[in-house]
Image (cartoon, rainbow, N blue to C red; front, side):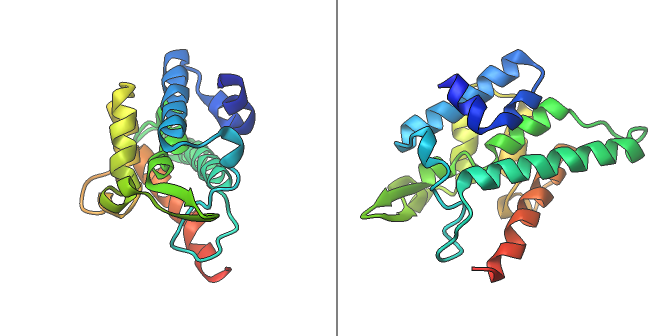
Length: 179
């Protein structure tokens, strides 16, 4: 599976730390297996159930959020490196995994994507952190996953989490009125 995931998610190649890369891939693979998804389905699963007839796939969304996060982080480092640092490897791992819990939260039944039993009780930031924690991903990556959505609005976000949070909403908000 590693080569297939690296092919469809080339942003993973931005992670230089090989241990972090392998843990990120393993986490992604476990979420796919647990949710019953195959790699080729990632480009068919809608990235959200909140937009009826959403044509943007889970894979498109994850890649776009990761790309926006990378570009934003590189720009911010140019201007603010003297004030704070950004761990690019953990930023990419957190971006790629920010919605990993959706692979547990969603199911395909009767040709319709809907909430799974797990999704009825746990939103994807919670299930995402649970699965990422099993792979002993760094606390900062867990923090990014946990705080990327509204669940993180009442806490403090590290710089990487701020970037992913805003990248996620930049990729969601404009689409609400498109479909």
